[in-house]
Length: 304
Image 1: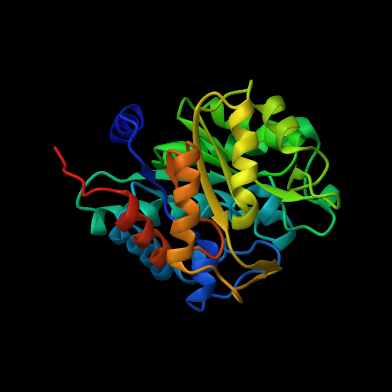
Image 2: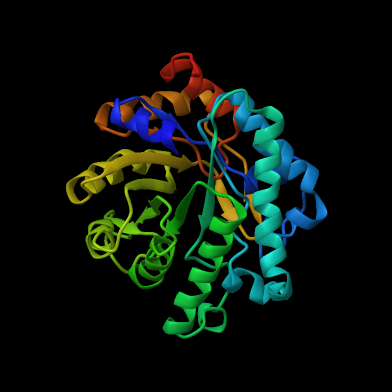
């Protein structure tokens, strides 16, 4: 992580990768109706690794492990709980192999932990809160032991589960970055994705637990600037954005109307001017978008 920390300290832009799950789907990998992209680690490992390699070739500083949907509460409804440890280890292994094959300079690996679920009735997938904390801690420790450089808590959509995931990740000693997902309620207010708390309420409740960077992520491009402006008012650390484009109808992402790489770069330019220091993409945003960000905003790197 030293080169990431150096870039942040010198106010240079850090480039995160784009989506993994939707990129796998775009390449023909079938998504599990309960655990989304988790099963791809078993069924199409070569494509998972290829996605990581393509992001590295696009010039990213960080790739994200395909562990968004390998938490126990994700695997439970899919009948894959018995594969929990294997899936998480293999997901990290594929990212490490991609780095070894494609990287010509330093590339960090982020382990994704998602305090969300695809379960129709979340009460049947999440355990009691004390047990949920141990589930998050188990995944965080497993990802750390498998070789990730930092942990990304992705799609924080409510205070309760988000707090547990952040608390668990912070026990590993690795850098922890927080991704808040937002959408508007019926009156147009920017809310956490679950629409039970405002973004400001969510960030203020979770910020004291830990974490060194916070993002607006898995949020519509059109809503991300306003959400980022709100995030700036209540987060004192490093800031970033990685938005999505398209729409999710479980288990598939609908790619109609996906923003072009050039249009996404224009939006990213606004976020950068507002103070975002880490930029990437979420669902629907692929290597072409990241290459455009690299072209427009990241000077050529020299490695020492």
